[in-house]
Each structure stands twice: as C-alpha cells, then as structure tokens.
Image (tube, rainbow, N blue to C red; front, side, top):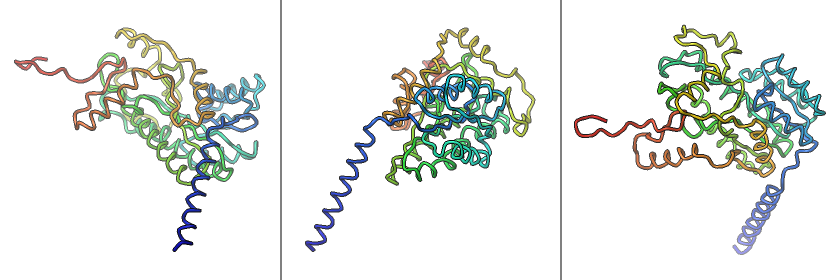
Length: 340
C-alpha cells in the first residue's frame, strides 16, 4: 500500500512538473521569424493585412483565396515588399481544395505554424429571416462555417504532428456577442451572417478544449475585429458563385458599402473605419501572448455580453439586442391605456 501511495505521489509530481513546463512555454512570446503562415480570404481586406503583417515578422506567407486575379495582385504586392509569399487559389467550401492547400504549403515550406481561417462572405439577404433565400443560407454556412471546419480538419493534424502552431478563426461581434437585430433604418438586419459567426465562436471554443485535452502546444484563437472595416465583405454578392445563385427575385438593390454608410450616417451614426493594420497587429500580439480572445480595447459593444448573461440567468426576454447603431431594440413598456 505504501508503494502504491509513493507511485501515486510520483505521478502527481510528474504531472505538476509537466504543467509548470507547459506554463513556462506559454509565457514565452512565440517567435514567428522563420516560420510559415497560411491565410484564407487572403486576396484583400483583413486577410491581406494579416499576410503583410506576418511577412513583416519574418514569416513565409501563403495567401489563399477563391478569386484568382485579386490573389495574384495581392501576392505580387507582398513580394514587392520583400516578403516570401505564395498564392494558392482555394475554395474553402470544398474540403478537397483546402486539403490541396495544406499539401501545397508543406511542399513549399516544409511546415506551417499559423493557420488563419479568415475567408468569409457577408450579408446578401433581404427582409425577415423567413423570407431569406435558401441559397443565401447555404452560401453563408458553407463559407463562414464549413470553411473553418475544413481548415481545422486539414491543418490541425499537421500542427499536432509538428507539436506546435496556432489556429486563428475570424469571428465578429455581430453574432459572436449577439446578433445585430435591426438595421440603421429600423428594418430587420440580416440573419445569416451573425448565425454563422456565433457558430465560429462555438467551433473555436470546442477546438481550444479539444487541444487542451491532448496536452499539445498547438493553440486556438478567435479574432474579433473591432468597429467598421473597409473591406469587400460588404459587397460579397459581386463574387457570388453560380452554384449559390439566388433562387428568389430581389425586391431591393444589392447592398453596397456606400449605401450602408449613407443609411448609417442618416440615422445619426458616425463612421470611423478601423485600420486593417490594427486588426493584423491584434492577431500578431495575440499569438505572441497566447491569448484566446483576439480583441481590441474594451468597447461599449461588449456590454451586450453582460446583459445577455443577465437575461439568461433571469430567464427574461432578450432585451439586450441592439440595432447597428448600438441602440436597444427592446419594446418600451406599455403605459396605462396601452400606449408605449
């Protein structure tokens, strides 16, 4: 019995030592120089900004995108800045395409250390959610959700075999915190996009837990870009694949960034774009500090999380929901006589 207790004590000490060593490793800033990164949705916007920032850290970069011409232009731009870069045309909705991307990265650089599942499509739906075209739902889910799943399935086994690496999944406060319920003019906001981003957060939380269970040094991160971003996602419809072609006739014009800004400002909102470089800095800092939550400074938008938690605990209606301007969408309480 004494021997068993001693062995149990030894095992406990070994586990403690392993935990301390793991903690020490995580406390050291992750050195990106000489390593390789892959970024989906890399032909523009946040993806290109991340690729450029990784290159500035001395990393080799693979930009992946479904749009061949913009991808070629982005690759040339980074190469002209002295960054070791390659572009690989990739459709994240097709697992075999993402699998081929992983093989190409290994063929070119022998390893991959940072995987950014960043490809995304924005809102193209109109009206109430029960009026949304089913093709809109399929497109949004396939790109924003299955695109992340495909990236995890293709790359995480490689990272685990290497024994190190980072997976960064791009989320959004619109869905990750709670859905924006109404647009600037009071009409219903799109439902597809926030639903997919809520899924991305859950996926990343699960990935974090599963990686922790293996004791690996591979880490998961979720990126919440802050504020308004001047990217092509506002006008995703311009590059809508034929297989996701709309099956319903639109009643309103397709969304443009200019129209969104006009409605926003007409409703009293003030638009200040967050520099894409700021988001990219956020990613690099998050990797180096091993932070799960890649977020900017605390903002009023995050208060919805506190109100949401309170609503759940109180079993109350979701009066924490807001419109695109951050205004509450809760109904005003009825006064005597039935008036609000």
